[in-house]
Length: 199
Image: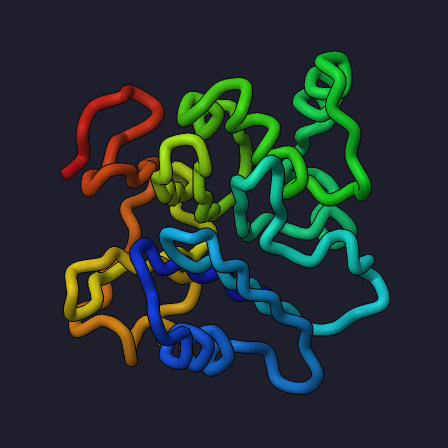
């Protein structure tokens, strides 16, 4: 089990964010990391396991941008997602990878293709990404809605995202399911498979 969480705005006190990340955390010993992106926070929590190397601990970073994602473990579900072709294409462009984790592909894909990358991802996924160049937070969910993702706003109107609804309970008055097949950027949801605004 893993939990991803993103707070999109200036945060002077990470206590509530940390509490939200931990309250949906797996029982027993776990590993977690919170990255201060300067304009917000990204957090990740997973059950500790020798099967997952430390280099796979998220949020992952690339040139100041960072991302946290939830994908099926290929060791458990080897048939999906299958990003071997995307990995090979990025390697041909000069990218190198430290692990076999498909999540490591997301920031290079975003650098190369921007939000168009979401239409390239097959299978289940939920991702929260901070783009250092634009200062934007972006979140997205697979078109079937197989991977859980929720959103809300804190009292100051800052968007908050998490893979577990209970993570948002102390931060947001209202918690809603993230619409499948969409990405969020600059205050609105966009359907990435047809580029039609969803809300």
